[in-house]
Amino acid sequence: MRGKSGEKPEKYGLANGAVDLRGKRLGPMKTEEIRLQAKANARGLMPLSANVHYLDESGAYKLCRADPVEIVVREPHFPEWLDNQEKIPFPMFRFETERARQVFLLLARAFREDYVSKGLFIDRAGWRTLTRLTHESQLPRSAFYGPKGRRGPVLAELERLGVVELRLFPEERGRGGAVTKARLAYEKIILKRVA
Image 1 (cartoon, helix red, strand yellow):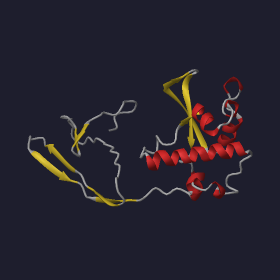
Image 2 (cartoon, rainbow, N blue to C red):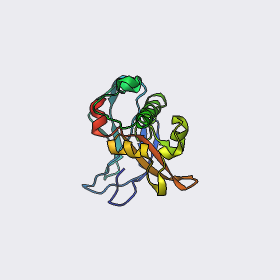
Image 3 (tube, one colour):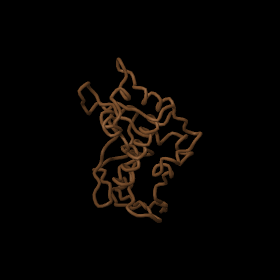
Image 4 (cartoon, rainbow, N blue to C red):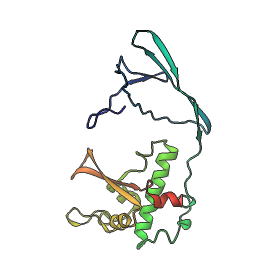
């Protein structure tokens, strides 16, 4: 639900496929936008329709039926090279070092595992802490952490290529403060073209 600029969206209850607006009143010519996120549990056509039950200005119950739509649910498409390291598309990715290529594949597989196997939403899939990357890649810590808070050479190369994104997670605490995580930059056009 989107409110006025700068306001946090209102939260409403969701039960048995219905959104309860808890007595929300709308004035004449006013609108309210509600955004829902749906998660399909099977492939195929998913019919989607909405009914709005409301009280009009005279206090009478009314029903408004929105036009139904059908959403096509497909398996997520992932490129072959996620399963076969030899099929990384060259010359699109020209890694300067084997270490960068190794970490890129690690992050690509992590993204696929979270999104496909675990069913996480795309915005939460694939994030790994630098400490976990150090452990899983068996590379030295200096590959990820540079001097004086800079990026290590592996992360710097992957960022320069535009194939990973880094983000601070202030709600998670590490030894040095907020936790930094990396993931495959799936949203970027360069990777969507390859996929």
